[in-house]
Length: 397
Ligand code: ACO
Image 1 (cartoon, rainbow, N blue to C red):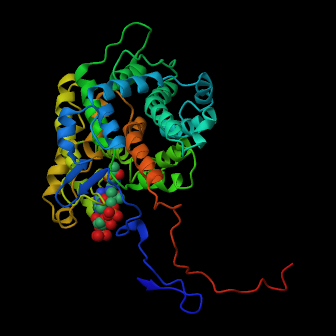
Image 2 (image 1 turned 120 degrees about the vertical axis):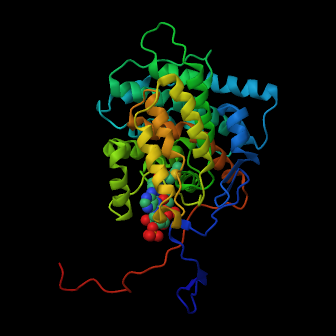
Image 3 (image 1 turned 90 degrees about the horizontal axis):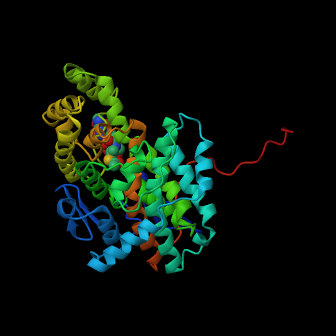
Protein backbone atom coordinates (compact mmCIF):
# COMPACT_ATOMS: atom_id res chain seq x y z
CA UNK A 1 0.00 0.00 0.00
CA UNK A 2 1.25 3.43 -0.85
CA UNK A 3 -0.17 6.65 0.50
CA UNK A 4 -0.92 9.10 -2.26
CA UNK A 5 -1.67 12.81 -2.10
CA UNK A 6 -1.71 13.46 1.66
CA UNK A 7 -3.48 16.69 2.62
CA UNK A 8 -6.94 18.27 2.47
CA UNK A 9 -7.77 16.53 -0.81
CA UNK A 10 -6.33 13.23 0.38
CA UNK A 11 -7.55 10.27 -1.70
CA UNK A 12 -6.58 7.82 1.04
CA UNK A 13 -4.72 4.58 0.40
CA UNK A 14 -4.50 2.77 -2.90
CA UNK A 15 -3.01 -0.64 -3.62
CA UNK A 16 -0.37 -0.68 -6.34
CA UNK A 17 -0.69 -4.06 -8.03
CA UNK A 18 0.58 -4.14 -11.64
CA UNK A 19 -0.84 -7.15 -13.45
CA UNK A 20 -3.49 -7.55 -10.70
CA UNK A 21 -1.50 -10.29 -8.97
CA UNK A 22 -3.34 -9.80 -5.72
CA UNK A 23 -6.38 -7.70 -6.52
CA UNK A 24 -9.87 -9.16 -6.94
CA UNK A 25 -11.74 -6.90 -9.33
CA UNK A 26 -14.95 -8.88 -9.06
CA UNK A 27 -16.93 -11.56 -7.26
CA UNK A 28 -17.74 -14.62 -9.34
CA UNK A 29 -19.59 -17.92 -8.86
CA UNK A 30 -18.63 -19.43 -12.21
CA UNK A 31 -15.17 -21.01 -12.19
CA UNK A 32 -12.98 -22.12 -9.30
CA UNK A 33 -9.24 -22.69 -9.62
CA UNK A 34 -6.77 -23.87 -7.01
CA UNK A 35 -3.50 -23.38 -8.85
CA UNK A 36 -1.33 -25.06 -6.19
CA UNK A 37 -3.41 -28.23 -6.19
CA UNK A 38 -4.13 -28.22 -9.93
CA UNK A 39 -7.94 -27.98 -9.46
CA UNK A 40 -10.33 -26.49 -12.03
CA UNK A 41 -14.11 -26.58 -11.55
CA UNK A 42 -16.98 -25.02 -13.51
CA UNK A 43 -19.91 -24.26 -11.19
CA UNK A 44 -18.50 -26.85 -8.78
CA UNK A 45 -18.09 -29.66 -11.32
CA UNK A 46 -14.48 -30.91 -11.75
CA UNK A 47 -13.11 -30.34 -15.26
CA UNK A 48 -12.12 -34.03 -15.47
CA UNK A 49 -15.77 -35.13 -15.05
CA UNK A 50 -17.10 -32.56 -17.51
CA UNK A 51 -14.48 -33.59 -20.10
CA UNK A 52 -15.52 -37.21 -19.68
CA UNK A 53 -19.30 -36.87 -19.53
CA UNK A 54 -20.49 -33.50 -20.81
CA UNK A 55 -20.63 -31.81 -24.21
CA UNK A 56 -19.49 -28.31 -25.07
CA UNK A 57 -23.03 -27.00 -25.47
CA UNK A 58 -24.15 -28.53 -22.17
CA UNK A 59 -21.07 -27.03 -20.47
CA UNK A 60 -21.85 -23.64 -22.03
CA UNK A 61 -25.35 -23.81 -20.54
CA UNK A 62 -23.87 -24.76 -17.17
CA UNK A 63 -21.49 -21.81 -17.21
CA UNK A 64 -24.25 -19.40 -18.17
CA UNK A 65 -27.01 -20.72 -15.90
CA UNK A 66 -25.23 -22.19 -12.90
CA UNK A 67 -26.83 -25.66 -13.13
CA UNK A 68 -26.78 -28.51 -15.62
CA UNK A 69 -29.76 -28.31 -18.01
CA UNK A 70 -32.67 -30.74 -17.85
CA UNK A 71 -33.07 -32.97 -20.90
CA UNK A 72 -35.69 -30.60 -22.36
CA UNK A 73 -33.65 -27.49 -21.58
CA UNK A 74 -30.68 -29.01 -23.39
CA UNK A 75 -32.76 -29.88 -26.47
CA UNK A 76 -34.20 -26.33 -26.57
CA UNK A 77 -30.76 -24.80 -26.04
CA UNK A 78 -29.23 -26.85 -28.88
CA UNK A 79 -32.13 -25.81 -31.12
CA UNK A 80 -31.67 -22.16 -30.20
CA UNK A 81 -27.99 -22.35 -31.14
CA UNK A 82 -28.70 -24.20 -34.41
CA UNK A 83 -31.23 -21.56 -35.44
CA UNK A 84 -28.57 -18.86 -35.35
CA UNK A 85 -25.57 -20.47 -37.09
CA UNK A 86 -26.03 -18.65 -40.42
CA UNK A 87 -24.46 -15.22 -40.81
CA UNK A 88 -25.63 -12.29 -42.95
CA UNK A 89 -24.37 -12.55 -46.55
CA UNK A 90 -22.64 -9.18 -46.23
CA UNK A 91 -20.25 -10.75 -43.75
CA UNK A 92 -18.92 -12.84 -46.63
CA UNK A 93 -18.16 -9.61 -48.45
CA UNK A 94 -16.41 -8.26 -45.34
CA UNK A 95 -14.25 -11.42 -45.32
CA UNK A 96 -13.47 -11.03 -49.02
CA UNK A 97 -11.99 -7.60 -48.28
CA UNK A 98 -9.13 -9.14 -46.30
CA UNK A 99 -5.78 -9.96 -47.92
CA UNK A 100 -5.33 -13.64 -48.75
CA UNK A 101 -2.66 -13.91 -46.04
CA UNK A 102 -4.60 -12.02 -43.33
CA UNK A 103 -4.25 -13.63 -39.92
CA UNK A 104 -7.46 -15.56 -39.12
CA UNK A 105 -7.59 -14.08 -35.62
CA UNK A 106 -7.57 -10.54 -37.05
CA UNK A 107 -10.41 -11.55 -39.37
CA UNK A 108 -12.38 -13.13 -36.52
CA UNK A 109 -11.95 -10.11 -34.24
CA UNK A 110 -13.07 -7.74 -36.99
CA UNK A 111 -16.01 -9.81 -38.17
CA UNK A 112 -17.39 -10.32 -34.65
CA UNK A 113 -17.05 -6.57 -34.03
CA UNK A 114 -18.99 -6.05 -37.28
CA UNK A 115 -21.86 -8.21 -35.95
CA UNK A 116 -22.85 -5.30 -33.67
CA UNK A 117 -23.82 -3.34 -36.79
CA UNK A 118 -26.12 -6.15 -37.92
CA UNK A 119 -27.89 -6.41 -34.55
CA UNK A 120 -28.35 -2.85 -33.25
CA UNK A 121 -30.88 -4.15 -30.69
CA UNK A 122 -27.85 -5.65 -28.89
CA UNK A 123 -27.28 -2.24 -27.31
CA UNK A 124 -30.20 -2.97 -24.99
CA UNK A 125 -28.10 -5.19 -22.78
CA UNK A 126 -30.27 -4.58 -19.71
CA UNK A 127 -33.16 -6.45 -21.35
CA UNK A 128 -32.67 -10.17 -20.44
CA UNK A 129 -34.53 -11.48 -23.53
CA UNK A 130 -32.46 -9.36 -25.91
CA UNK A 131 -29.33 -10.32 -24.04
CA UNK A 132 -30.14 -14.02 -24.36
CA UNK A 133 -30.67 -13.69 -28.12
CA UNK A 134 -27.17 -12.18 -28.50
CA UNK A 135 -25.77 -15.07 -26.43
CA UNK A 136 -27.39 -17.56 -28.83
CA UNK A 137 -26.08 -15.60 -31.80
CA UNK A 138 -22.51 -15.40 -30.56
CA UNK A 139 -22.20 -19.07 -29.57
CA UNK A 140 -23.79 -20.06 -32.90
CA UNK A 141 -22.07 -17.66 -35.30
CA UNK A 142 -18.48 -17.60 -34.02
CA UNK A 143 -17.74 -21.11 -35.46
CA UNK A 144 -19.28 -20.07 -38.80
CA UNK A 145 -17.11 -16.94 -38.95
CA UNK A 146 -14.07 -18.93 -37.80
CA UNK A 147 -14.59 -21.42 -40.64
CA UNK A 148 -14.95 -18.52 -43.09
CA UNK A 149 -11.57 -17.16 -41.88
CA UNK A 150 -9.94 -20.51 -42.59
CA UNK A 151 -11.58 -20.92 -46.01
CA UNK A 152 -10.68 -17.35 -46.96
CA UNK A 153 -6.98 -17.93 -46.30
CA UNK A 154 -7.08 -20.93 -48.66
CA UNK A 155 -9.15 -19.15 -51.31
CA UNK A 156 -11.90 -21.76 -50.93
CA UNK A 157 -15.65 -21.10 -51.09
CA UNK A 158 -17.33 -20.74 -47.72
CA UNK A 159 -19.38 -23.66 -46.45
CA UNK A 160 -22.78 -22.95 -44.96
CA UNK A 161 -23.65 -24.55 -41.62
CA UNK A 162 -25.35 -27.95 -41.69
CA UNK A 163 -27.56 -27.91 -38.67
CA UNK A 164 -28.41 -31.60 -38.67
CA UNK A 165 -24.85 -32.09 -37.40
CA UNK A 166 -23.74 -31.49 -33.81
CA UNK A 167 -21.83 -28.34 -32.82
CA UNK A 168 -18.30 -29.63 -33.39
CA UNK A 169 -19.23 -31.90 -36.35
CA UNK A 170 -20.83 -28.91 -38.03
CA UNK A 171 -17.72 -26.84 -37.43
CA UNK A 172 -15.44 -29.55 -38.86
CA UNK A 173 -17.74 -29.80 -41.89
CA UNK A 174 -17.67 -26.02 -42.42
CA UNK A 175 -13.86 -26.15 -42.26
CA UNK A 176 -13.10 -29.16 -44.39
CA UNK A 177 -16.03 -29.99 -46.71
CA UNK A 178 -14.67 -29.64 -50.23
CA UNK A 179 -17.79 -30.08 -52.34
CA UNK A 180 -21.50 -30.13 -51.76
CA UNK A 181 -21.22 -33.89 -51.38
CA UNK A 182 -21.54 -35.51 -47.96
CA UNK A 183 -18.84 -34.92 -45.38
CA UNK A 184 -19.06 -36.97 -42.24
CA UNK A 185 -16.48 -35.81 -39.73
CA UNK A 186 -14.66 -38.61 -37.94
CA UNK A 187 -16.52 -39.15 -34.62
CA UNK A 188 -13.24 -39.52 -32.70
CA UNK A 189 -12.01 -36.15 -33.98
CA UNK A 190 -15.38 -34.50 -33.35
CA UNK A 191 -15.45 -35.78 -29.76
CA UNK A 192 -11.80 -34.76 -29.23
CA UNK A 193 -12.66 -31.25 -30.41
CA UNK A 194 -15.68 -31.21 -28.11
CA UNK A 195 -13.41 -32.12 -25.19
CA UNK A 196 -10.94 -29.39 -26.15
CA UNK A 197 -13.85 -26.93 -26.32
CA UNK A 198 -15.02 -27.97 -22.81
CA UNK A 199 -11.49 -27.48 -21.44
CA UNK A 200 -11.20 -24.01 -22.98
CA UNK A 201 -14.71 -22.81 -22.13
CA UNK A 202 -13.77 -20.67 -19.11
CA UNK A 203 -10.85 -19.92 -16.84
CA UNK A 204 -12.04 -17.24 -14.41
CA UNK A 205 -10.34 -13.83 -14.55
CA UNK A 206 -7.69 -14.40 -17.22
CA UNK A 207 -6.51 -11.51 -19.40
CA UNK A 208 -9.25 -11.84 -22.08
CA UNK A 209 -12.08 -12.41 -19.59
CA UNK A 210 -10.90 -9.42 -17.57
CA UNK A 211 -10.99 -7.47 -20.86
CA UNK A 212 -14.54 -8.70 -21.58
CA UNK A 213 -15.67 -7.55 -18.14
CA UNK A 214 -13.81 -4.23 -18.30
CA UNK A 215 -15.15 -3.35 -21.75
CA UNK A 216 -18.62 -4.69 -20.94
CA UNK A 217 -18.73 -2.60 -17.76
CA UNK A 218 -19.26 0.46 -19.98
CA UNK A 219 -22.58 -1.18 -21.04
CA UNK A 220 -21.40 -1.60 -24.63
CA UNK A 221 -23.02 -4.34 -26.76
CA UNK A 222 -21.55 -7.88 -26.37
CA UNK A 223 -20.14 -8.05 -29.93
CA UNK A 224 -17.90 -5.05 -29.29
CA UNK A 225 -16.88 -6.37 -25.87
CA UNK A 226 -16.21 -9.80 -27.41
CA UNK A 227 -13.96 -8.27 -30.07
CA UNK A 228 -11.89 -6.66 -27.29
CA UNK A 229 -11.70 -9.90 -25.34
CA UNK A 230 -10.65 -11.82 -28.46
CA UNK A 231 -7.97 -9.20 -29.15
CA UNK A 232 -6.59 -9.79 -25.64
CA UNK A 233 -6.62 -13.53 -26.30
CA UNK A 234 -4.63 -13.06 -29.53
CA UNK A 235 -1.42 -12.13 -27.66
CA UNK A 236 1.34 -14.78 -27.54
CA UNK A 237 1.41 -14.71 -23.72
CA UNK A 238 -2.26 -15.75 -23.66
CA UNK A 239 -4.30 -17.59 -26.34
CA UNK A 240 -1.68 -16.97 -28.98
CA UNK A 241 0.63 -19.30 -27.02
CA UNK A 242 -0.65 -22.45 -28.77
CA UNK A 243 0.47 -20.97 -32.09
CA UNK A 244 3.80 -19.94 -30.54
CA UNK A 245 4.31 -23.49 -29.18
CA UNK A 246 3.99 -25.03 -32.64
CA UNK A 247 6.33 -22.47 -34.17
CA UNK A 248 8.80 -23.20 -31.34
CA UNK A 249 8.58 -26.99 -31.89
CA UNK A 250 9.09 -26.49 -35.64
CA UNK A 251 12.10 -24.26 -35.03
CA UNK A 252 13.67 -26.85 -32.69
CA UNK A 253 13.18 -29.32 -35.53
CA UNK A 254 14.68 -32.43 -33.94
CA UNK A 255 14.79 -34.15 -30.54
CA UNK A 256 18.59 -33.84 -30.52
CA UNK A 257 18.28 -30.04 -30.47
CA UNK A 258 16.13 -30.02 -27.30
CA UNK A 259 18.95 -29.76 -24.70
CA UNK A 260 20.46 -26.79 -26.57
CA UNK A 261 17.05 -25.10 -26.67
CA UNK A 262 16.54 -25.62 -22.93
CA UNK A 263 19.92 -23.94 -22.33
CA UNK A 264 18.72 -20.92 -24.36
CA UNK A 265 15.59 -20.76 -22.19
CA UNK A 266 17.70 -20.86 -19.03
CA UNK A 267 19.93 -18.10 -20.44
CA UNK A 268 16.70 -16.08 -20.88
CA UNK A 269 17.13 -15.80 -24.62
CA UNK A 270 13.70 -17.34 -25.28
CA UNK A 271 10.67 -18.56 -23.34
CA UNK A 272 9.60 -22.17 -23.28
CA UNK A 273 6.19 -21.49 -24.79
CA UNK A 274 3.32 -23.53 -23.37
CA UNK A 275 5.00 -23.63 -19.97
CA UNK A 276 4.17 -21.58 -16.90
CA UNK A 277 0.96 -20.03 -15.72
CA UNK A 278 -0.02 -17.12 -13.51
CA UNK A 279 -2.32 -19.33 -11.46
CA UNK A 280 -1.13 -22.94 -11.84
CA UNK A 281 2.01 -23.64 -9.89
CA UNK A 282 1.38 -27.34 -10.51
CA UNK A 283 0.47 -29.38 -13.61
CA UNK A 284 -2.41 -27.61 -15.43
CA UNK A 285 -5.28 -30.17 -15.13
CA UNK A 286 -6.35 -29.33 -18.68
CA UNK A 287 -2.91 -30.30 -20.01
CA UNK A 288 -3.29 -33.80 -18.50
CA UNK A 289 -6.63 -34.33 -20.29
CA UNK A 290 -5.33 -32.85 -23.54
CA UNK A 291 -2.34 -35.19 -23.52
CA UNK A 292 -4.73 -38.17 -23.24
CA UNK A 293 -6.98 -36.75 -25.96
CA UNK A 294 -3.96 -36.28 -28.22
CA UNK A 295 -3.26 -40.02 -28.09
CA UNK A 296 -6.84 -40.75 -29.27
CA UNK A 297 -6.53 -38.23 -32.10
CA UNK A 298 -3.16 -39.58 -33.24
CA UNK A 299 -4.69 -43.06 -33.55
CA UNK A 300 -6.90 -41.62 -36.30
CA UNK A 301 -4.54 -39.11 -37.89
CA UNK A 302 -1.18 -40.80 -37.30
CA UNK A 303 1.41 -39.55 -34.81
CA UNK A 304 2.39 -35.89 -35.11
CA UNK A 305 6.18 -35.86 -35.74
CA UNK A 306 6.56 -32.84 -33.42
CA UNK A 307 5.19 -34.85 -30.49
CA UNK A 308 8.59 -36.43 -29.76
CA UNK A 309 10.12 -32.95 -29.41
CA UNK A 310 7.31 -31.85 -27.08
CA UNK A 311 7.68 -34.97 -24.90
CA UNK A 312 11.45 -34.50 -24.68
CA UNK A 313 11.05 -30.82 -23.74
CA UNK A 314 8.60 -31.76 -21.00
CA UNK A 315 10.83 -34.57 -19.71
CA UNK A 316 13.92 -32.37 -19.47
CA UNK A 317 12.07 -29.32 -18.08
CA UNK A 318 10.26 -31.24 -15.35
CA UNK A 319 13.60 -32.52 -14.05
CA UNK A 320 15.55 -29.30 -14.38
CA UNK A 321 16.23 -27.07 -11.36
CA UNK A 322 15.37 -23.85 -13.34
CA UNK A 323 11.82 -25.01 -14.08
CA UNK A 324 11.26 -26.86 -10.79
CA UNK A 325 12.28 -23.83 -8.71
CA UNK A 326 9.91 -21.54 -10.64
CA UNK A 327 7.10 -24.13 -10.63
CA UNK A 328 6.85 -24.10 -14.42
CA UNK A 329 4.68 -26.92 -15.80
CA UNK A 330 3.01 -27.49 -19.19
CA UNK A 331 -0.13 -25.39 -19.56
CA UNK A 332 -3.24 -25.92 -21.70
CA UNK A 333 -1.44 -24.70 -24.82
CA UNK A 334 1.49 -27.10 -24.76
CA UNK A 335 -0.26 -30.05 -26.43
CA UNK A 336 -3.44 -28.52 -27.93
CA UNK A 337 -1.63 -27.20 -31.01
CA UNK A 338 -0.31 -30.66 -31.85
CA UNK A 339 -3.91 -31.91 -31.96
CA UNK A 340 -5.11 -29.02 -34.12
CA UNK A 341 -2.20 -29.53 -36.51
CA UNK A 342 -2.95 -33.25 -36.79
CA UNK A 343 -6.56 -32.39 -37.60
CA UNK A 344 -5.25 -30.40 -40.58
CA UNK A 345 -5.41 -26.85 -39.25
CA UNK A 346 -2.63 -24.32 -39.94
CA UNK A 347 -0.93 -22.79 -36.87
CA UNK A 348 -2.47 -19.38 -37.56
CA UNK A 349 -5.89 -20.91 -36.80
CA UNK A 350 -4.89 -22.03 -33.31
CA UNK A 351 -5.84 -18.83 -31.42
CA UNK A 352 -9.18 -18.96 -33.25
CA UNK A 353 -9.65 -22.51 -31.96
CA UNK A 354 -9.21 -21.07 -28.47
CA UNK A 355 -11.62 -18.17 -29.01
CA UNK A 356 -14.52 -20.35 -30.23
CA UNK A 357 -15.04 -22.25 -26.96
CA UNK A 358 -14.05 -19.29 -24.75
CA UNK A 359 -17.17 -17.57 -26.14
CA UNK A 360 -19.25 -19.37 -23.49
CA UNK A 361 -16.99 -18.24 -20.64
CA UNK A 362 -16.76 -14.63 -21.82
CA UNK A 363 -20.54 -14.44 -22.11
CA UNK A 364 -21.16 -16.10 -18.74
CA UNK A 365 -18.73 -13.68 -17.07
CA UNK A 366 -20.21 -10.71 -18.93
CA UNK A 367 -23.74 -11.65 -17.90
CA UNK A 368 -22.70 -12.20 -14.28
CA UNK A 369 -21.04 -8.78 -14.29
CA UNK A 370 -24.18 -7.09 -15.63
CA UNK A 371 -26.36 -8.80 -13.03
CA UNK A 372 -24.10 -7.89 -10.11
CA UNK A 373 -25.65 -4.81 -8.43
CA UNK A 374 -22.25 -3.86 -6.97
CA UNK A 375 -20.46 -3.84 -10.31
CA UNK A 376 -19.31 -0.45 -11.53
CA UNK A 377 -17.57 0.70 -14.66
CA UNK A 378 -13.98 -0.62 -14.61
CA UNK A 379 -11.70 2.28 -13.85
CA UNK A 380 -8.41 1.36 -12.14
CA UNK A 381 -6.46 3.90 -10.12
CA UNK A 382 -2.94 4.91 -11.04
CA UNK A 383 0.07 6.04 -9.08
CA UNK A 384 1.06 9.21 -10.91
CA UNK A 385 4.82 9.40 -11.51
CA UNK A 386 4.99 12.34 -13.94
CA UNK A 387 5.86 16.02 -13.64
CA UNK A 388 4.37 18.37 -11.06
CA UNK A 389 2.43 21.28 -12.58
CA UNK A 390 4.58 23.52 -14.82
CA UNK A 391 3.94 26.39 -17.21
CA UNK A 392 4.16 26.22 -20.98
CA UNK A 393 7.40 28.14 -21.88
CA UNK A 394 6.49 31.73 -22.67
CA UNK A 395 9.24 31.92 -25.35
CA UNK A 396 7.67 29.10 -27.44
CA UNK A 397 5.44 30.29 -30.26
N1 ACO B 1 9.83 -20.13 -20.03
C1 ACO B 1 10.90 -19.76 -19.29
N2 ACO B 1 10.82 -19.08 -18.12
C2 ACO B 1 9.60 -18.75 -17.71
C3 ACO B 1 8.43 -19.09 -18.41
C4 ACO B 1 8.57 -19.82 -19.62
N3 ACO B 1 7.53 -20.18 -20.33
N4 ACO B 1 7.34 -18.63 -17.74
C5 ACO B 1 7.81 -18.01 -16.67
N5 ACO B 1 9.18 -18.08 -16.62
C6 ACO B 1 10.04 -17.59 -15.57
C7 ACO B 1 10.16 -16.07 -15.62
O1 ACO B 1 11.24 -15.66 -16.42
C8 ACO B 1 10.34 -15.74 -14.16
O2 ACO B 1 11.65 -16.03 -13.80
P1 ACO B 1 12.43 -15.06 -12.72
O3 ACO B 1 11.59 -15.09 -11.47
O4 ACO B 1 13.78 -15.66 -12.55
O5 ACO B 1 12.46 -13.70 -13.36
C9 ACO B 1 9.47 -16.75 -13.45
O6 ACO B 1 9.42 -17.89 -14.32
C10 ACO B 1 8.05 -16.26 -13.15
O7 ACO B 1 7.47 -15.86 -14.36
P2 ACO B 1 6.49 -14.63 -14.54
O8 ACO B 1 6.62 -14.13 -15.95
O9 ACO B 1 6.70 -13.66 -13.42
O10 ACO B 1 5.07 -15.32 -14.32
P3 ACO B 1 3.69 -14.70 -14.72
O11 ACO B 1 2.71 -15.33 -13.83
O12 ACO B 1 3.74 -13.22 -14.76
O13 ACO B 1 3.51 -15.19 -16.24
C11 ACO B 1 2.96 -16.48 -18.13
C12 ACO B 1 2.74 -16.26 -16.61
C13 ACO B 1 2.72 -15.16 -18.89
C14 ACO B 1 1.94 -17.51 -18.62
C15 ACO B 1 4.41 -16.97 -18.35
O14 ACO B 1 4.60 -18.19 -17.66
C16 ACO B 1 4.74 -17.15 -19.83
O15 ACO B 1 5.13 -16.18 -20.48
N6 ACO B 1 4.62 -18.40 -20.36
C17 ACO B 1 4.86 -18.65 -21.79
C18 ACO B 1 3.66 -18.26 -22.62
C19 ACO B 1 2.48 -19.19 -22.43
O16 ACO B 1 2.60 -20.41 -22.51
N7 ACO B 1 1.30 -18.58 -22.23
C20 ACO B 1 0.05 -19.34 -22.09
C21 ACO B 1 -0.50 -19.23 -20.72
S1 ACO B 1 -1.95 -20.20 -20.54
C22 ACO B 1 -3.12 -19.28 -21.27
O17 ACO B 1 -3.10 -18.09 -21.39
C23 ACO B 1 -4.23 -19.97 -21.78
